[in-house]
Length: 207
Image (cartoon, rainbow, N blue to C red; front, side):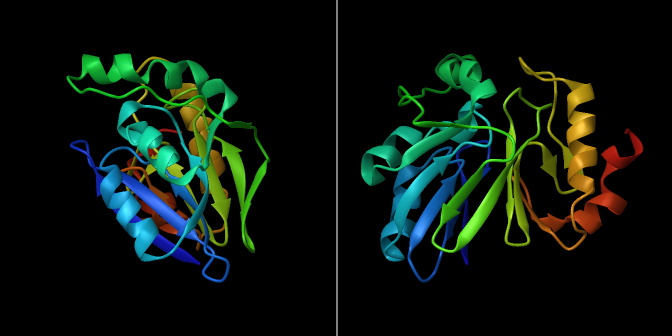
């Protein structure tokens, strides 16, 4: 499994490119900005992008979706409960002083328990609301991509539209029930493990 990470945009969101090294099939998670850098990685590794997956639709995680889709033809994937946030991403960006080009219509809505496959790799969709209504994590192959649900030592804020602290607590506890050695790749900041978060995340004392 190939995992490439890029820190993109002024809000320093993590974009992940995951591929089956044999088939070169790939997914891109949260292409938030700087599409040229993302496309350079795709081309340098001869990847065939199958899905563009938005863990949630805040503008700093979807800003390059249109360019990546135009380049690759990949399917845009979100949770059905995130559609309102996705459709409002341009307005949210404008409120923060950023310009966002129109987003393409999502191609696929995923739900809890759905599986996405690239080559021999399989990832399960976990619906983890709290930071946003349709927030998802992708879990499989001993790793999890958590978007802004879980960070190293912290969690996503809940004061944006659609945030819900009680739901975030439930989502956090669910993630803490995963295998301790599961590698955590978050939407911002460094990676960690479930074991490290169970002992070192401040939010563990809040739930």
